[in-house]
Each structure stands twice: as structure tokens, then as C-alpha cells.
Image (cartoon, rainbow, N blue to C red):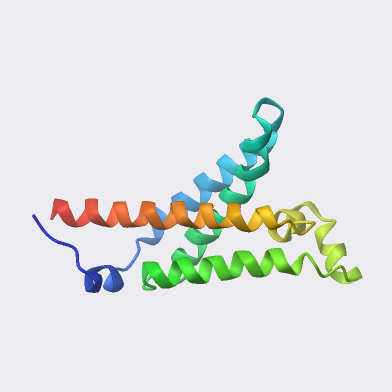
Length: 142
């Protein structure tokens, strides 16, 4: 059995087609969760959309930077998600005009919530764990 060491993970190049599929699937699940929000329990509605948004950001950054290590990708994704959340504390007219657009609201959000930081951490954590699992599966088949 092949043992994965830190060097293998850091040298990994992500398959962009796989990541594009992951991005599209995550977007679809996120939009479906919004459309079906009336049928989901409140605690799921509170966290699911934000966690899926963070997961999507993880996949997008992995797609754009395919040679970035999992650790760096996790940290960078969290930084982007947290930056977007903290930007919601800025209530300037120009950025609120962007947020009033549906796409702008999906990307930038509308209001700051500390709980969103937890949801982002969960979403990015799911991406990191999924990627580590997929790498093990890939190397064990070789």
C-alpha cells in the first residue's frame, strides 16, 4: 500500500475539470437549498447556504490555483470568506448598490453575522477533508 507523505500532497495538481464539476454541483445545491428553504429546519437554513458558499469558494480557488497545497488552500479560502464577511460591516453607498443586485448579494452578502464565520469554517473544512480523502483514494489505486 502506498503511504502518502506531505510532499505528495503539496506537489498535487488538481484536475480542473473535476473542480469545475464540483463548483457547478455546489452552486446547484446552494440554489436548491434557497429554493427549498421553507421545507428545511431553521438551523439548516441558518448555516447551509453560508457553508456551501464557503465550499464553493474552496473549489473555485482550487480551480484557479491548482498547485496550491491543501493547507494553503484552506487558509486562503478562509481568508477570502472572512474578508467578504467583514466587508459587510462597510455600508458605503457604492457597495450597497452592488449588494442590492441579486448576484451581488449572493457574492458579497448583505449583513455581518458572527455565525457566518463558523459556517464558512465548516464549509471550507468539508472541502479540505473531501480533498484529503480523494487524494488518498487516488494514490491508493496506483
